[in-house]
Structure formats: structure tokens, C-alpha cells
Image 1 (spheres, rainbow, N blue to C red):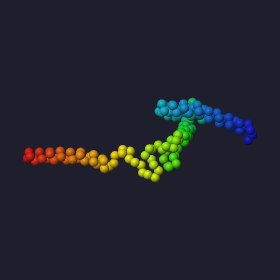
Image 2 (cartoon, rainbow, N blue to C red):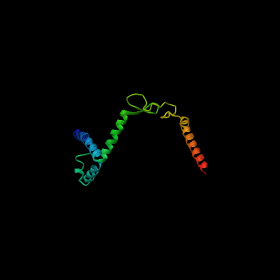
Image 3 (cartoon, one colour):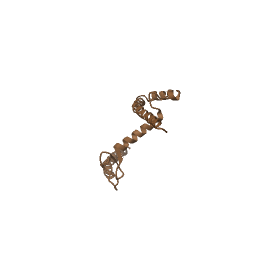
Image 4 (cartoon, rainbow, N blue to C red):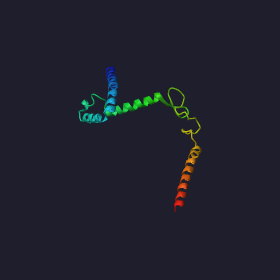
Length: 143
């Protein structure tokens, strides 16, 4: 291959990448605003000749690949695996979950132990049982 062919290939690649930068936001906005209209547009574009397809937007496979790469890039920038296996923001070493401590089990979110829940429900159970006893006693007195 001579230098001119390589230069043309690089030029075509740069043109394609710049067109992706232009058409990706347009395709994303169209997909988010009008998903059914986008599906009909894609079906209509599939019936065109290959050189006439998707002149105004990205093709669905390319849009999918770029979306996955963008999401993965954002994940790498903003969320990274912590040293202790927990997820943390890329902005510091503080874990996302404040209850996470290496080597320990997670604490309950509510802070209420099962025993405290049982203690809370005990007066309710005794109130219900005393009401049932009173009703049963009244029924016995009537008969």
C-alpha cells in the first residue's frame, strides 16, 4: 500500500467518526422522544438501497455499539471497583454504601432489630387477644 491509500483510509475514518459525533445525539434524541416513529423510520430505511440507507441518523447496530461503549466509558470514569470489592465513586476512596466494611456483614438499613420488632408487636397482640376475650365473654353472658 502506498502512502496515498493510507491517507485516504485515515480521511474516511475521520469523516465517519465526525459524522458519528453529529448523528449520535440526533439518533439518541429521536429514539428517546419518539421510539415508535424511530422504529418505523428504521423499517423504511431497511427497504432502501444500501448506499441510501441511514443518511440522517446512525444505523441501529452502530447506534447500539456506540451506546454500549459510551455507557462503559461513563462507568469507567464515574464508578470504579474499590480496593475492598465494594463500588465507590471515581472521585474518592469512600465507598458508596456507608455500611460497607471489609470483612464484616452489612448492617440492617432500618436499625431495628427483630427483637425490637417483636417487642413492638407484643402490646398489639395482647390488645387484640384481650378484645377477643371480652367479645367471647359477652357472647357467653348472652347465652
